[in-house]
Image (cartoon, rainbow, N blue to C red; front, side, top):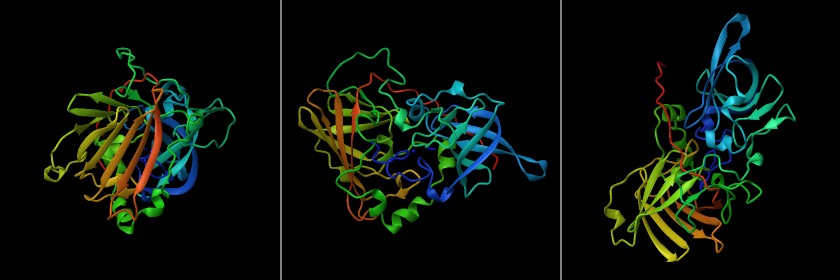
Length: 347
């Protein structure tokens, strides 16, 4: 579902199955395959939904609600809406919900003509050599361009995650994996996450997750503040520059209070506290109000890459600091519109 991410993918922090916005308590770790008729398809934010009608024993049918990846993440690998036709009989694979009787985390779709489509970025092929999708098929071609954008250089532009041949996807360095340093309290807090309620209501995450989804990000210079826009949820952070404001006097919020300063002409340092968002990684671990985040963004000397290092400290939820590093590149992309539609449910 929803997969710098400080993590994450699919959600930022942990490479767990399933990735994205779901807690591991929501889905079985075992893969399940089934066949059925595609009766509906919703190509929407924050995640794509497939609805599959499956025949059961006794002749009855059940419609499974199957959540897949984001339009951007699978689109970078060439997966498009027109590959799927409502009414087709398809074979699918993924992880069944352990909480809901009719929900499914969808990873693979086998089309009638034999082509296999990976509908999550970290998917693995199961049936066919004729494959579309997957993180390994990412190219450094813009998925959605900003035709009005001036092709400026420097720090203030849209930066995108690179293909895997540029840098390993979301590498972890200088720290053990997040899974190894979370506390029992963090794991327990993560169990309260309800991804379906979150997505259906078009809710927006807070820090650190909102800033580190594997989607484009944009720095905007406004003088005494810098805006940092995220494409995945179309959320904008405010970084207060060169301020004497004491963050301890600021209210808590999902995005907290960020103070930034220039270390030199090409390096921006940001410190954030006062974050009330209760999850460090969507569907994975909780976080406390003691969480603080230290970010360092450095423009490469040839201005073709933005290097980042993010350090998360939370004495309640982590046994030691978690460090995430990575690279963004300029593909000439824009920040897309966020067209999430609230889903009304009767259950």
